[in-house]
Length: 320
Ligand SMILES: NC(=O)c1ccc[n+]([C@@H]2O[C@H](COP(=O)([O-])OP(=O)(O)OC[C@H]3O[C@@H](n4cnc5c(N)ncnc54)[C@H](O)[C@@H]3O)[C@@H](O)[C@H]2O)c1
Image (cartoon, rainbow, N blue to C red; front, top):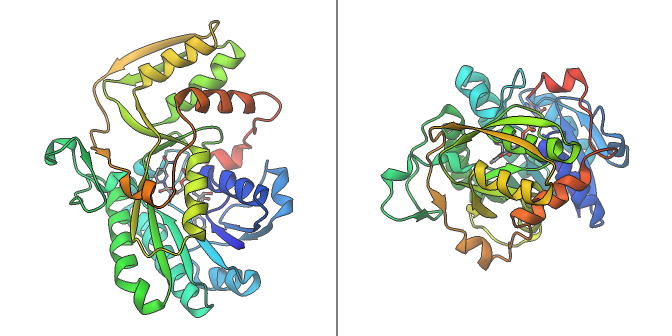
């Protein structure tokens, strides 16, 4: 299958591109930023294109002629993270997260691409206390507290409204908090992501440890879920995916267990996220079963540290 990954030069995009290519898929990457510090991107078709520029995105579709499209582009600026960036500039966030997605839906229709998968988010939900049970499934009411979550809600509504009319199967994957090597911005999961490389190198680190458990998922499991959806004949509009529940303190404990020389200090903080845990029954039914538990996530991440770990160039750090 030939997969076009839009926003393919980011944290998830790079992992997905590598994972898809390893499985024998042809991969084309489109992103606003050229793929610096990513030597293996040479194996892929690469387009520098801005999703807010209709002519640039159209050129990508004309040149690539993909079988399936995965849309991962999201507005980020100054290395601040997607949530903070969207809150600071809602118009720009709507332009990328919603406008770019809508444009992609239309281009799929116009180029006969039958499959579009994109990443929504569990930030579509309101605070956990709004919901009666311990977990929420895909039918639970949304109530985002952030502009970022609101853009995802709008994307989901547009997917539902236009999929049949456009003749495109559109699946929105709602991953919980994704962690692993290669995050290119300082988001809520940054402290978590910093733990492993510091532990491997024996460097001292202090990390904020909010008083809450999070639904977490390792990056490779998100890539696998996106690929499964891209290949699957299902019109499910929204699918949750998550790996395991853990707090930052739980992750730190597991890291310490695996790297006894780790010098980790935790700084207690009040809860920051507060969204409900998700039910993943639908994903299981669709054959999406995350393989990485916490211990395996840490081991896999640790194996990338050192020679294999990417060193970001300064112009990359500033962009998301
Ligand atoms: N990381 C998580 O925890 C998480 C959780 C749930 C959902 N998601 C979603 O997954 C997707 C990927 O997230 P990520 O963590 O890899 O983010 P990222 O910032 O690393 O990747 C997004 C990519 O989109 C590109 N992009 C931004 N604006 C663009 C534009 N105008 N035109 C073309 N490309 C543009 C960026 O250059 C970047 O490479 C996003 O849609 C995000 O909302 C992420």
